[in-house]
Image 1 (tube, rainbow, N blue to C red):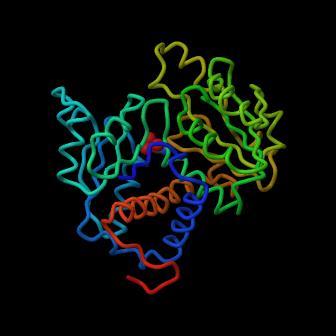
Image 2: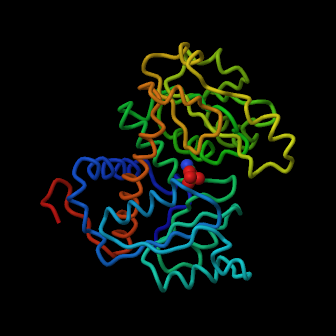
Length: 317
Ligand code: CP
């Protein structure tokens, strides 16, 4: 049984196949509109979500399948003390595939070990958020035409932001990638990620707290929200939450073709005055999230022998 716990569960070749499938779905959605008829996706969300849960559900509905699930721990038997292991054993009787979000790091791995259906990690604590990474990669690939030879600025909460951690892991597999890490001292990228991943592979990176100084050099600026829910101390959160606010004045320093990405939700870190700037692609990014999740559901269900994918370029189903 194949699961998705981390973006690295997919080889570069498998990832390229997935991105190609997502682009094929975007071009010709009708061709894929009935493939999952009779199949069910369960969304098990122990933490709040708008995009990830609803884009998974939209993806399954677009494929002709059905959805079931819960959107908070309080509305499931977790509130009575049921373990993730027991829950997933039960869900395996009800659904063909599931996406799970949980505040504890490693919870999705525990679920995958007990499941009889493919399990997708939809975010586990501050650890990984692989389907956001797939969304980000599809956005970059579709709008820049490549995944290598890019200078990527990561700005905001680089300590707790799991989307940033997953994106770094995924992008270092491509040639010519370099990073500029822009954060306050307290929210710097974890040292193990620098030592074990970036230094180990000799990936060039710069750390700074000055966004303006590095703006002209970037191909992509990936903004992140300060993760209030992961702070132990409200005072620290309040001190750091508005450290970076991207506005029109700062965007004047950026290249004409620099993309501004954000996994969303946004709080204050990007001014709404930028939303009409053609370089601000965060809402397009959310749309790509549906296509790539459709491609992922199809890939995992086909791998489990539950559906048959149409031949590449072949007749419609
Ligand atoms: N990007 C993202 O994970 O958004 P949600 O928390 O709304 O799912």
